[in-house]
Length: 622
Image 1 (spheres, rainbow, N blue to C red):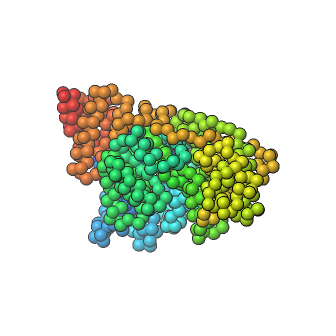
Image 2: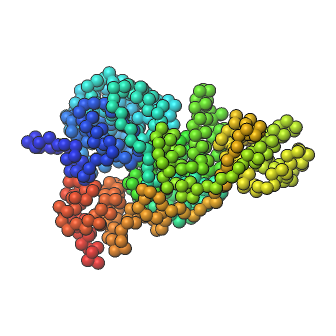
Image 3: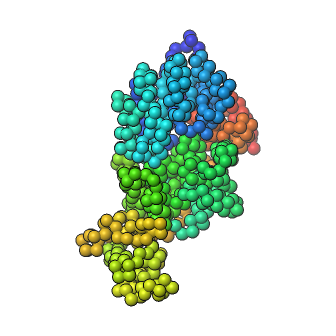
């Protein structure tokens, strides 16, 4: 960024206001910036949407030289650079998408001191040629984004991150900052050790995202459930739907599109060109739904994703938290919704058992899955359980399904004993093992070809569970599996008694179960929200506006869309919805007044100020 040599040095707050258009720092931002700008190392744990990028962008502007940003997100670097250039920051990237002559030009800019920030992938940074290049440049700092990727036991391990420990020796006088939004205490320790940042100051913010409403519901024709969610609460809004398999991704995207929901598929099996096109459309168009595997999403800086839905059970709470965290980066009310059932548990356990990992790897994967199941089946606040997994205490949130509609519990000890007895009798007396369907048939005394052939009607447990329906028994089985009282093993998910079954069978432990939830069309909003959940969608941020103001807001959105198309950038790079709401509420009559609105920095004011005032004038005149 060009600053006249005669001008006094910028302060962090000056840059925040003049460049980014914000008047004050949030949380630990100021302390982190002060630490890194002063030459110290920092390890930063901050939730998605908490403003992590400012923690290295502002120090890079304050210190002489170029800030190097290590990121695994090659596909997003161009957009990240474009967003910085939009506010007047000199930025570039070095990655495999550049032609040799383009890469050489960027290198010359670096050596000439013409860049404020330079992005590169970890595999490029640790190459001897790159280290030599950086040794000849003046470096302001080194930022390691998505630093949890260095953890071998984490959900997002990237082997190339292991090589970043070389930075400690190669650039001992250059401050380093490692940042992540997803880390348990164990991952935090491993991250610090592997990056050799033992001398760093640590800044751990609350992982709470109060604007996100967490909801988990039993599967009951999940695509239909998803469609109801979108139509009743998020019509016309951007969202991400996660599926376990590539086939499910494609089928779900087609199914939604056939029902007039604009949806695109994204998975690693698609051609790189198609993936890039779909990602670009998702970022730059309003109201698209991306149906994807976990190959999609890390680093997606789209602030107006209003919902993240899971049609299959995630492997871990870390993965779930990171994926749901892509909703509501702008702080507006958003939904994290998931449908899950017994088959999800069977599938995930099979994937673990069939994996080529070591026994230690499999034990770790099973513990991650067990924690995920506990979150799904909790009868207390989901947010308390979620944050507790990351070692953070909290209170009941009032903005998750278990708070808004507390589950009814009942004494399921006898029901648990009946299921365990049926599993044991089939194994001992018939030397047979079955999945959940046949176990439930035995408990209900339901005749079938398999039951008749195997003489199940002769067992003492035949028909002893007719007080519950098939749906209720499936709920019981799912909850018992989550608690380790029952286990589903093998390719076919046959049921066996689990490690926690003994005390239950002996009557030494009481089993408290929750009544299965009936899927609800929509939920009310709790704390941290700006209003009700449903309605026409498209402009969730505008719910606080009065009717006449909403028309002005929509006029500004239409103007923003035309500008974004002309510049071929995502609309949020022009202005966020939250900033447009601020403009409507402030109703500025001059560019000076417009410049006081949060999110309107100096460069954007100069570039768009007169146009915004013209839109406001036309809208108010109309």
